[in-house]
Length: 366
Image (tube, rainbow, N blue to C red; front, side):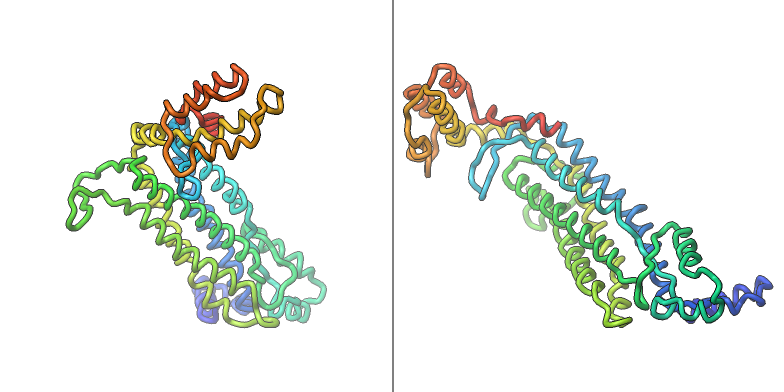
């Protein structure tokens, strides 16, 4: 800070402003300058660079969600075949989650102090006891386009940074979830990767197109998350009026955001280079007719309540039919035909297929 002060003094002298050189760093402590500098730097980085990169990923997810809104797919809860959804709806979930956290990040405060050695304006009042120093300081800081923290120790307390980094880390966790899910969908054959001319894949297996964009994103998000977590844990504490742990810690803010930006870039490029294999989705659904067991038992319950069936414990009935083995269309249709339920309900069930058992997934995606 003293080096910067001397630089400013020299610059004033070259401009013929020696008379005000003594006002350089007047009544300030280093943290009056640093807190404003970090607030300005981080604000510009988040609003001008990081948020646009996140928005690009969200925009691509929204585009894919609409494009694949009607693409029925087998869900997997606990890794097992479950009630079908659509690929569009599942991608829309990620866009929805990210937009929610994005709103919190966009609403972040960027606070700075300007109140002297221990936040009391002591030196200021000694020099001019009649000036309204808190108001003067607030007007100056807010004039820079950042927010003013009126009550501090020697340092601005960094709570705004803790809040911001926790939100960015939260967004990173959602993005990490996206990367691992897309990787898994690729491994299942749901997505095919579009070959890039001239690109090298596996060193020994030329048939492979490795999902490296999503793997790189995953690793960079883990590094970013670890750094952001460390920043949050360290910056929340300062011993009494000041210690220097924050000084070293804050030098890694750019590294944390840098890894996050690498991840966002890889995710955006990766999402541009995948193509949905609808035939694979439909084939997977056709091999898992047992997922309709949920629909059948639920319809039976509704029929019992309506007085059109006397079946007891429909869950156990369907468990005996479906648990631990595959059930085909013909076997399921034969089972439904024999059920003691109303004709309308029976026809609804007979018309149902795994590919049409998606509820309002398409509408949700759109």
